[in-house]
Image (cartoon, rainbow, N blue to C red; front, side):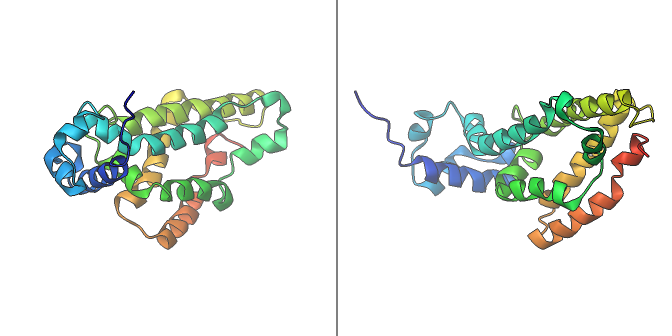
Length: 204
């Protein structure tokens, strides 16, 4: 049985990453990707069905990391959480926010490709779909806080979606605009001052 040669995969992925980052998915050229990687288009089609599947291979790690990050904050057993912990979960802080920025920083180019260069792929609506997932997570915490009398304001699902769209954009835009790591750290402080979630849900 022949063993698939995987030695060209890193070169191919790196070349695709560079091309997608520069031109976006639609304008990227598969032949240019192959030429820059030093491989034939035939070698690509032995590994991927086409340009979009190659795109998915570039962004799959950051998509998985984002899903894991959100799942860790969505699957919560509230029976083991105290009122003080519920209150703390609504207070924005640099220490609670910076881990996401640092995680995304480790996938910097791939994240930018995912959120800004994916038009024409199955991920072109990624941000909208991710906000829907975020809204679900926030709603769970809100319902629990409201049922305990910790949150006193009425906040609808649509309102959470609107606010979280703004929140998500505030996470994405520093990467779209190529902020430095130091600038992102300052941006994180500003976000924590701007998004007063405790006030949104009416927490005293």
